Image 1 (spheres, rainbow, N blue to C red):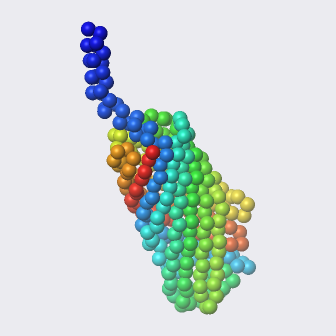
Image 2 (image 1 turned 180 degrees about the vertical axis):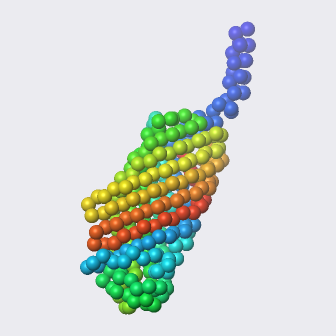
Image 3 (image 1 turned 135 degrees about the vertical axis):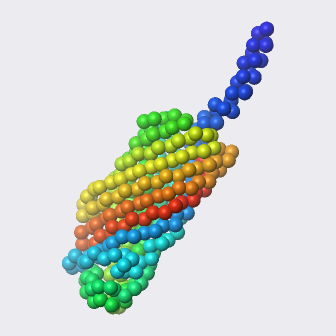
Length: 260
């Protein structure tokens, strides 16, 4: 009789295991992960290059002819050592250029360029993120976290006109705060959203940024995954004596992910 009860209990556990353990297995196999994504961006905005005096603000596309449509690659990783603590890092770089005749006179650095001047433009941008998050809701199904960290900007812009090159370089780390939400309704499916922001003046550099992203991930064998999402990044940075950049870039993303 006792053997019959044990056998019945074992059969019940086996029957229930697939239904209850999918999320748990996914959580165990989510201690670390890496991903790459392709991000066709559409960047728009304005910039300013200072010289001995402050330069004029100009449109990157309308005045300088910069082509802001660019497909860039991003890499990232996450680490979930234990409990409610998570670490995330990511980064991308983009290089853009263009040319056109100035539709209006502009002061660019120390150069006074009249209307009709042929100009070449270039923008190199690197953006890195390192965040720590603490889960205030920590369940297999739903995870809600607050996060703190730093975003690092390394940007350089150049304008070539009248045989001269005027440039500005803006780089530095900016403290950020934000929140993230992760929903895993099925073991193979995960939905993730994140929003971060900052508004700081550190030394001679002032920065404002807003970064939001959402994505859906689907995994096979709980390890290999593909995903799709959307991201919008708005960035304003200004440094005394160098210049200013105020841009927004957005676009859909496709991902390849591995989690362990």
